[in-house]
Length: 511
Image 1: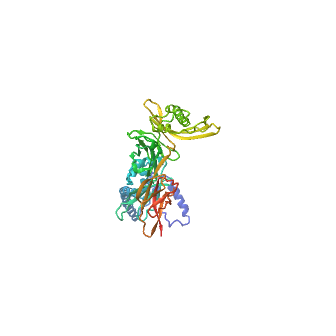
Image 2: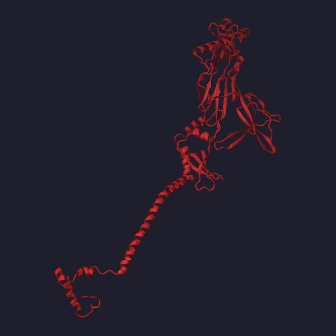
Image 3: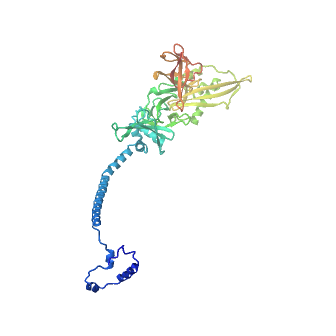
């Protein structure tokens, strides 16, 4: 019997329903159902499987089909997205890599690392288009920078490139700027990615080093393997001994040569006339290079005794304490000086005795001109006691020249009462105006005047004099006037000229 919602509220119906429910809960025998001629479903089947409504079944069918179509399309879109991403992503990544690499910050670091992390100074010298001089090239620059920089890491920083549109960077060694490089955009106009490439490389170093070398006549000075000629000679020295020496024999002579405009201390070598190298040395105080060999062997004890005995014999003969024959044991009897002495009058006619003041005695200024000729200056004081008891002192300050004779003995062949080793010096004066050299010549160190070249005075100016230019460590230039010539160009030096090698610049002032 149907138990619907319309019977739910009838009195007593609830008890019948409960009884019926209890009966329905009892298991039914299959035979009972068959006997009744009914093929009814079990109670649980009736409640578990309500009759489907025809319209609801149709809707569920349509919903399942739409869902499948939606997910198919959704999946297709996802698949297409990932395929497109797989195609586009590498290109995008490459573009991003190129974009990042094209940025000035990235490119400057790349260029700096390539050029200056382990710098090839020779290649940088060539890249910067540095011009060689007669004495320095890229090899000299490389050696100079390797010594200067060593293992110290370099740094770089960006600086202004003006209105060029480039990027400019300074390369620093501590606080010192040693180079710059620029980045230039080589891409076409309005390109998406700029093409920053290395533009210009500049190197910074000063050619303000100079070198001074002393040599003997006949020798040649080489600076970094290049020979200096006479135009580099700024000072010459010889002695008065030249007046007493035979042809081809010379006393002390020195030539001083100078070279300016070097970037680094150079390699200095000196060769003899035959091309053989000689050792060189540098003075720790003056910095001047010179031959590291003795020009001659020093005076021996035997030679000193020979010189002193000859000088004393000279004074003894002057008072006729010895004869001319005894004098000839020390003097060359065929020399002019021997004849002059033997024909001269005695210093004193009569005397009691004489002594030499050994506190005064000295042998100095020894110079060996050759294996067969040397000279020395002897200072003596001979006190002569005359017959009346008075004492007369004879002072001698004489240079004796000794020449080896055929028998091997050295005899006096000449004497001089002047200091023959006194230097006679010449110095070079170079005159420059507006960067051009007007003249250059040697002037005697004892000259009382010299004539300077004429100079063209710019309009609105007047000539102030010849000045020496100096530059301090900060680059400040100072002009110090040394000479003011007369109207004819003559410069008066006075009694003590004190000339030194100079480069003199024409100085002007406003009218």
